Image (cartoon, rainbow, N blue to C red; front, side, top):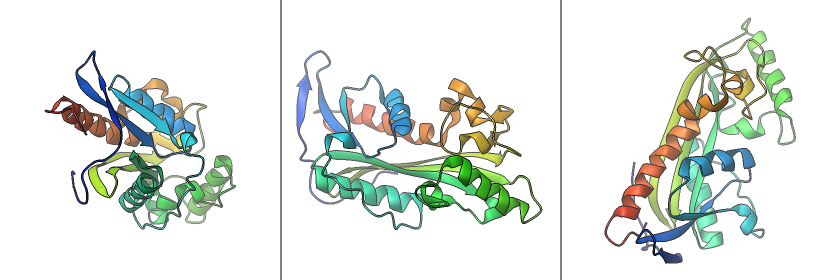
Length: 225
């Protein structure tokens, strides 16, 4: 989905003579280095300078008060676009478990408390399922992203991957809830999927859509976002 409002883009750009394109700076609005790595891999090769929030130490994290992943992604992107003066892409993602009425959902990162470890979060999930006489449940990973310049929404996308909760955590790869997310087509958890995870992940889906959008914009007349 593409939406636009507000003033025209105003962030710095510079030409890349080899390609004839205009190179733009985009801030990846996350402090999660595992996410940064995934996103950099997906956007690799584009004539863009990708910055992280490390470049803006005075930009404090906003409160995430949205009721959906889309609302949180848009709010974070708008906040950081204003505080950094850059084009910003922000994402909000998490795990929805059907037997828990969609929890932890938008609270995925804060589930069990902001200081809780993921093994502790897993225990809370298995306890909640066990209280219902269950050891598994249909579940999905969801990722929503928003690309913002000033107050202008340039692009939004959403990715979803369906699976189930594994009977127990398995695998040492990936991060977050990957060890308890069983993906039936692979016959393993995403933490056991190695490089195959990138082919199907929710974040991969959303940011590949962003890459298609950026490629089209950069190749258009004027080569500006």
